[in-house]
Image (cartoon, rainbow, N blue to C red; front, side):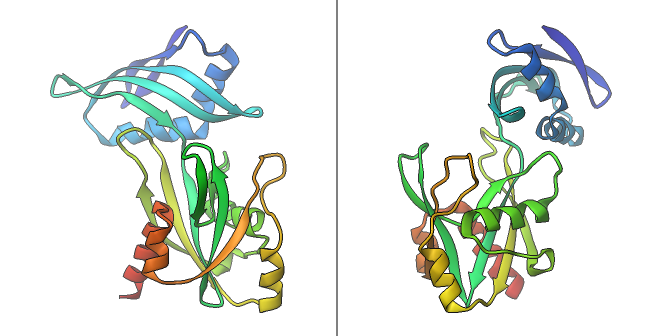
Length: 229
């Protein structure tokens, strides 16, 4: 199946890979993350000849992850064209009682437990603040209001292979220590998503930040300190 889509007013072949279901192919074309990706090409003069959907991973009835193969050229030279289409995400530097509230969970892609800033993927609504508050609630049990969140900046995660942009926020608040201790005893995570998350409370120091190896946390802390300058 080949159809045309428009990029900068020009027809570009949009190709269904042989192992991709037609229903999934149609949903990719309509998905917000794909539309955002197509719009990103409007700012460049790179020639795009075709976009092939080679694999689709669904989250229930919604598009989750997509592998694309792009046939694109700059100055007549073919560019590396594999794309892991993941879409936008949010991550939150959560400071409670002047300490970092982090999440610990097992991450299959790296085969180990990790300690990270609370984070999650964007939904089709594209409400950054709403998703940030939802993820904090699901992953930590802490309820956050929109006016408690402060935007820091956006970061590209791995532009050599993925479209993912993470929108970074900071939340600073105080809680009763007994309430926080009770949350640390529980296991958190979105129902039905297989998450088994425990809270980790650490001093807000560069030593602790860098020790996590979490790029989201490191970038959020750097942006936080930059705003303080």
